Length: 219
Image (cartoon, rainbow, N blue to C red; front, side, top):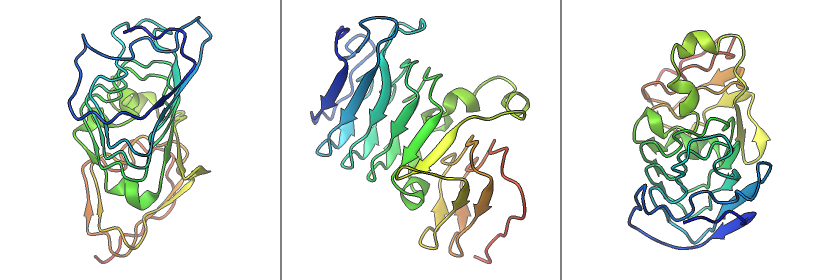
């Protein structure tokens, strides 16, 4: 479907089944002109963002007008390709209940450099189906990523709207899941809570600006 004149969208439907690339509901949303912007707000009563919901088949520049997404606090799952090819999307806020993000949810979101999470503890527990489920996958999967971002990594992490420069994993966290804090550029310090027992694969990979002493808890 084409929703080219929509400037903002409040989405409040609860749909459990995924769409497909051919049946994506909001393809090209907000695309009324090259400078259009569209904010999508997912309501707090929504529990699932279906796969391919905002998928855009056109990968050309400005093919999709979505620039900002707010995921409500009731959402637990973000489906595969849910925001794929939203190549103007630059800021996303994750609700406090997000627990699972599926493969390629943010495929082609090449402008996405700012991630606002509800809390460090909540985001530590999120299950990313694989590395392609990370909001910053466009950085993590680029060719020679380690070499290309050593000079400057512009991604930013916020927790409840406050910029995170020193990432402190709370004492109530026991596991930091795979890739959750990967490729974050504004984090300069890292402190692991005393109860952390497990650090997942790539949990802090490509956080190239972290410097100083890292203390590993006895746990």
